[in-house]
Length: 447
Ligand SMILES: [Zn+2]
Image (cartoon, rainbow, N blue to C red):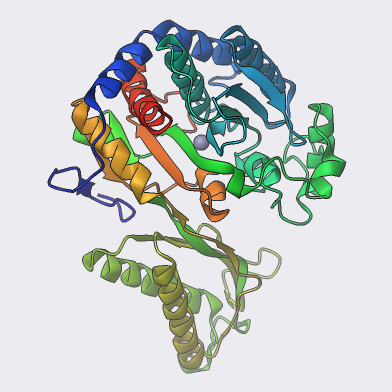
């Protein structure tokens, strides 16, 4: 069990809104009838983004990503949905509701991938939205509000070093300077990428929003699980309890003093020993929290002496490191940051070194809407689809919507072999079950 695993197995006995059984079974039947649509869409993804070196590559704002947005839009139109795009070149495929002025339901995920990734990470959420709309149409249901499927651009931060680009751009909260970020391989700026893909970087720079958070009734995202828990537990579906927030030191240093290898112990101000004590102390802190049942994770991903000055026979005077600490509650994050700083102060005093932490980056906890999660759980139970609740150690577009105050919920689908690799192992059967839960919730909520 990992530390970000929230082991709340659905066990019954909770008071939840009751969902009409016929709607649930009709939704499941209708979604099951959309199998060939789902397969067609996953095949389009493979056809347009297979990488000759393995897996799929759909870089943000690349011709591959744009052609997928185009083809998905064409298929959506053939299903009777209306297709629009915004200044970020995100795609919206909308099943019109009875009241166009009502707050809309947004279903979405990202259509980009990491280099040589798998076919399902992100894209499954867009396919799920289209399958849900097709199933509602198949049932002759016109929902009370618009249902929009959002093909989100540029979620994977490996390319531009900025997270949630498409969703944060649509919400008007892209960080300052993001448009000047350069793609890690081609050097193309984000602004140029958006322009080439048909978007409007000037409007993005002016913080033109596609919608206000208050225009949205909720944001729903289906995603493959990136960890092994559903596969381990033999469950097709997970209901996500939250997305962790974090605090990060992207460029921290321990400053000691370079010295001769013969320097006596008490005279040393050794940066490596001090930093190592910090690593061990953070690991012990994590173990304490794990023992107390408080989920968190701590990663020191970079840890290096200065190659221009270090030597086998020198006491190291400098060490650079990064820190990423994540947890599911903002109170926990605050406490962890205080404890981290206390550990640092104690090491500084005892070892005569100085920690220069640089900027601290923070991301808010992505809290899921309890009422929607309870609804998903009730529907899963109605349909006898085995499910459990679990946390999402990884970040998702949902976090951007939750941070903007939009009621947000996520469904995970069982996936063998992890994600961000060509061996992602989601089955269409599992995908359809998860999509049926989401569809039934929408059908019931928009009666
Ligand atoms: Zn993803």
